[in-house]
Length: 148
Image (cartoon, rainbow, N blue to C red; front, side, top):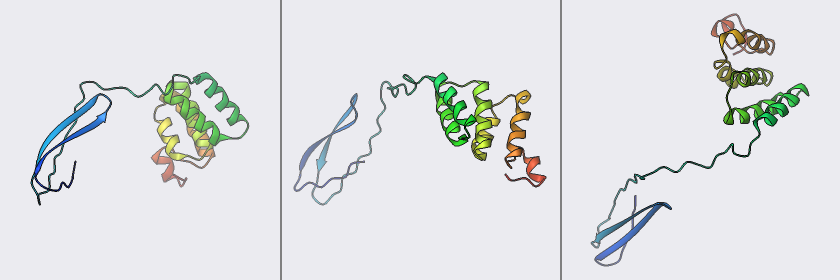
């Protein structure tokens, strides 16, 4: 939306630029004492994708560093690294590991998110790890008096 004030009557040309490839020019008649409000919607002919955030990322290095951090007792750092890796590559193994790291970090929200993406046959050890950390991934576990 454009709001402007012009002294005197006349015609004003306003150029709007939403992006390098999008430009709109408006010619508006100006009348003293009248506010001009013009709403404009840009509809680009094409959409430019953001730069590839994973272009220079070595996912295997992130996964290995996360494992080293987890083994050294730094579950929060491991979770952060595996989350970065998941942004570039998703697979069952990485979700399993992410859920384990989230449980060890006591991050119930992340644990539930990643746990839900793990196939049922791989869920029991993750659920057990979370239970050992005092986190309940399943609603029925909460009913047995565990933290949610």
